[in-house]
Image 1 (cartoon, helix red, strand yellow):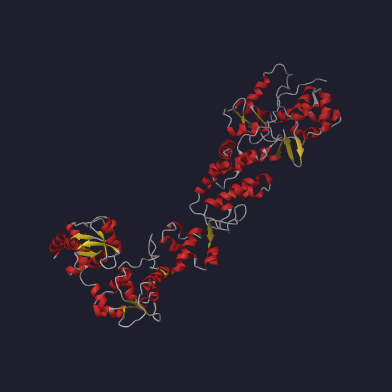
Image 2 (cartoon, helix red, strand yellow):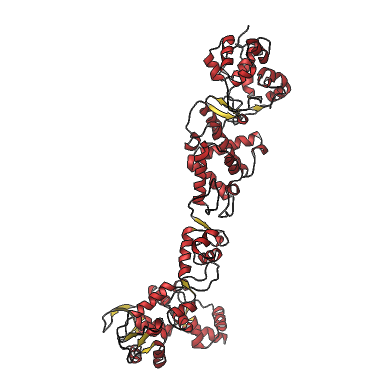
Length: 604
């Protein structure tokens, strides 16, 4: 009997086939002559190894390390378990340059020089690390089982195909993914916490799966790609996943970026395609952490509600679905989104989305619960609707919600703020007896004062006699002395005007006055009230009159010059007259009177 050596990284079936060829027979026949079956060698059974070691004069432990053992429908290679598909021993896979190197090995018996490396059947390995050469894959030899495991018979059965492959080699540098495969077979784990926690078969599979989705799209299957494309996919997936959790997040960001919009109740398949469906069908416990990281990241960065299923439904989410919005707040989700966009709490692109961020939903729901339309606002403070509108124009009330960001909406006012406003006025009441006092509306008629002027006096506590009639609603309960009001509104003789007084003369709002003062277009000072000694902001009468003589607002120009808004705009356009102050700063267009009058004359 002739003998052959067990070569470096040679698999057990290759050694058996070469041993048989040296003795001019097949592996199947040789095994029968030794009292075992070739299938036993293929399975790596202990008995077959002991017999082959005895006849082949090789230490049993060496043969055992070269064996590939069957493990419940899978195979164990160097302690790593692979499904049969991923460790394809039935296919003739080899490196042409390794075979050429074998052919030049004069120390080996002719016809037994070539041998199969134990790493070649690994489907994910597509480049020879020694020669930087593409692995050739000729498929399954046309032989019956277990004879297609006999490497020597397989070469004869596929002689033409093998000859073509030897003549058409191509070079390529091994990828980091392939280096990872080989290092893991040497029990080296240094490739990130996610991959290191998985068995090699699963880690390699997930890398390739992620790479396919990243490079070729979420619905692309492995079967539609060639070996070069799969080689690139394995490398790309490894680049992401070897980075651990942050690398996985980078991959998921790529997948998220391919969807223009994500429904709140969407499932993982819609977001990640085959990457998700394939992983979901794998119930390997080693994937639990991997799936959990995907689930938690998706819930954290995507607008997903509790109805979304990405490896399970989330217990808590940043977003609420339409059903959750209805159940939790009792409001129409579409109306909530519309008002949230108008309020600047939600991006206009999300107005038709099916979900809302929880914090936005809570905020807008609180506002809507507190909000009232102008008619009800007027009723709450006990005034006529027209009076409320006048107070609104005078700047006493700002809407809680209104049109904005492309959304048209009726103004809504805060119920709480309105009631607090009434409460503030009620706290100014200083008389129990109502004798000689009249309601604000009556006082307005007797003194020709505006309702807003009297409210200003009340808020500034400039009236000594203020009563409260509890049986009347809101401001209708205020009782004041018309005579005192008349005196309080009489022209001042101290050479100053209160800011509120000039505001009334200009027929403008608190916001506009504040902007004029802040921009130093009007000079003001703080003085003590002569009686109450309370600090108050005033403007010299001379400065106020100079401002009124010099400037006029667009709205006041209509009234003062008796021109239509259309003609006024025409005059401004033809003359090219610009506002005297920045409109975005002041909020109202003021013009130099002299220039505006000249522009109007040209139009007339």
